[in-house]
Length: 456
Image 1 (cartoon, rainbow, N blue to C red):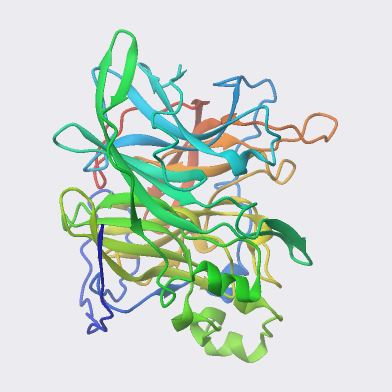
Image 2: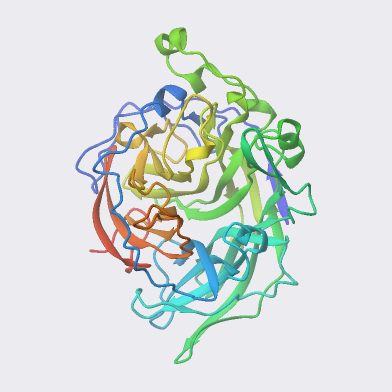
């Protein structure tokens, strides 16, 4: 593994005009854009986060409690499809392939994280999924647990399997409760391996498992290390969820992930609070500075995705939210939607928001002055009467949004544990607006095209 780091302060590129996207009818307001290696990070401010609220356009339908378990012997949660290098859905001899976090149901719902593995599913129609088990040798994998990632099928038929290598929480400080809630102290690193893939009448097969290797670790400057996290012991440490992304407008490739701010952003700056007028009347509560989530990025330097250049984060939520999980990107022409999921309990003191899929929109380039979509940042959220019914939403390039059933309430108001695919939602992306337009079947994934172009 080779990793290059560079601290570079680029010149601000002022865009005199922004070309309207051919795929959106409403253009995003023109904004300043930066080179991908420039030392600029957009901020999700407290002023913006105060506007988070459920709307009709962003509230998911209530999930029917008569749901089926896609794999009855295992809990199933964070899910992602196998994509081609350009972002389109991979098709292997008529099969669609998905991966998800799994753990045996012999573990409790809450303990499933401590024994998480990544399982494989395949389907001919994208609705009826067959669970094919864990495709890798656990003894070869890195970390005690393997948490969420992404998967890319390259032009040579090789599967690049990205994941989070996570240490044993019990062996590395464990988990405990403090006044802020659950503290999770497991070190996380970004890892990958490779497979050959084949398919026949008996299903899909991953073979010839490659070496497992660490791609990236927190550097302490842009991205907080486990040691830095332990100094203040907030809620959840994070350096995870590697997402492979090829920018359709430049052809450059990147790994994007969830991180937390390092030493260069270890306190709250004016831009983390809001504009001047807002700052004059707003008091930031104690400990808000420890809620320091960001969205990291590294540039891919080789075709095998083993050499990376660590770059400054794309977005930060210092003083706003501690956790920007599973970040990913949807592109429509020159408009970039940076998407992430977050929890109610990870908002900083003085702020609140639902478990949901949050989105930020910018124009012209991947590193841009992102602003919350819809004026609220919400793209998908659970209904108020069932606030935790689903989680871990992931949006395909055409707006299909998959998730898992989390903790819905039954007719008596009692929490039930899901651990299976939730109904897929279809979301429209139009300028700085999004809207849920359709509910599909549980776990449904229809074919979709590359980033920047949807199948019709």
